[in-house]
Length: 361
Image 1 (cartoon, rainbow, N blue to C red):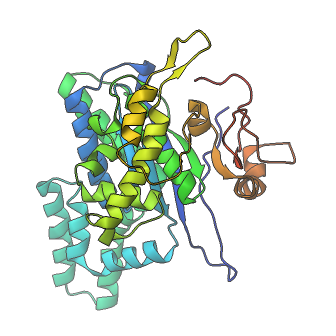
Image 2: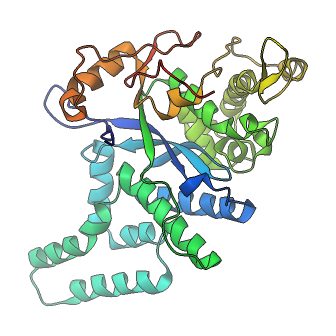
Image 3: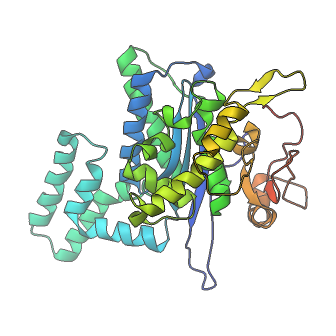
């Protein structure tokens, strides 16, 4: 029996919906086949950024490897002030609406939509009727915005279509549905999850520095890609566009690199065998000598399932609040929601799903 996907839900004291929610999403290629090379990963980046620009879902960071991808995204609730204002603008402004569609659609398809909107605008119907007709045309597109399932589902669908056509194959490309973990929007925790994602290639032994893996958010940010920097600044709690190229970014970058390098240190067992790939302690010391500013914290000695299977990740209070709202739909019989990870160094962090049994490293 599949577990219901958890989506953020919040009402303020007046009963109005509002809020921005963060999710760590993961999806794997069917049968875990290693089919993504450089061209496939570059196409993933292109499609993901186009889907981001169309949907309004913000990518904080991401990575794409040979058989799976991770994304950490921020999704405004459909009823939030941000989403409501954006959709109202797109409903009223045909030029802005077509500009959003341009990120996903070819000129021919875009031209058909533009032609239809012009036809309605030039018709003889009353202004009120024209507005209804225009809304009918735009509504299917607007409903796909600020929606987590649409963002990831369409990303996977577009990649499948492209890959199958390019390789003369048919059938599904991905394992069933994607996994998602609802993450508490606290900067320290978001930074931890972001670093976990950016360190995937290091843990796989593909590179020793995540900056050298081109297909991740951190490498984009290090190369001065503005969207990537904005995403990491938001994860670090410093979402200010003015910081993208100035002293603010430089300071945030040093702090984030410290988190990354702590998480990149290889791990050895009692017999001195490497059980997790990464940089050596001496290599870490060399990075440290370059001037990290944040206190030393071994934040990322985490095991994979806490980030991909925990269902909800956050403080005990955050997990309990989600549990209280979703307990019935999830079919959980226990009375207390937060589960304590069997791992040192996580402090107050809790998950909703109990992972204290067998855990993959």
